[in-house]
Image (cartoon, rainbow, N blue to C red; front, side):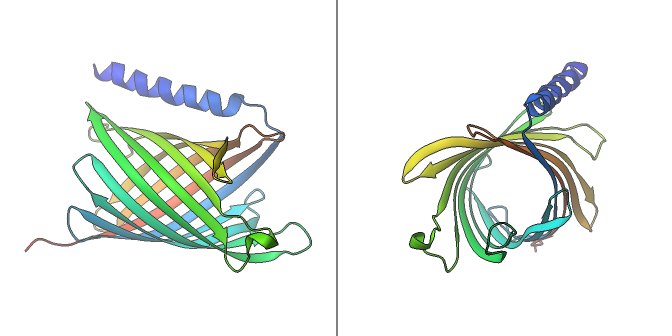
Length: 236
């Protein structure tokens, strides 16, 4: 049974990798996402996380953006969670006549569902997201970008092994003028976490993001590194 589970997980990752690289690439870039997070869990129902992230693009040679993000999650049941998030972004605009850093604000509302099948853990997230540039009106060319995002993830729990593999697939569905425009990109993520006792958790990820239903699709390869320290309220 254990061998079947391992083979199933390996096949799933192989299929996802093949799908990600089999698409024809008209434009490709390599990015890096580095982040530091502080998480606070006052009880079993609530959690709060503050994150700082830096993103580099143009083959990791230029700053794409950096942001501060605050998220909270509330557990309705053992399997269902709700979440809210706000992100203040400094985005580097290096194209066109007017270049420089822009100020953006992003909001998101999430619904989570988690369940287990033997040693496999499945996670699902539905996210509604809005983002716009601060200080620029629609008459000046700024329109609120609205997305509906659906993410599915699977994690395999190896006994006596700290680097459990994770895989997720996510579709970004953009709204335009109140109507669904198109499924304009998807994201595949492979990764793992390593917990250090009393020192936090380090996460390593590799992502593929590809545009779809566009004339010139872009493919972005992303290497992500995240450190998170969690503070839990000790029971008296």
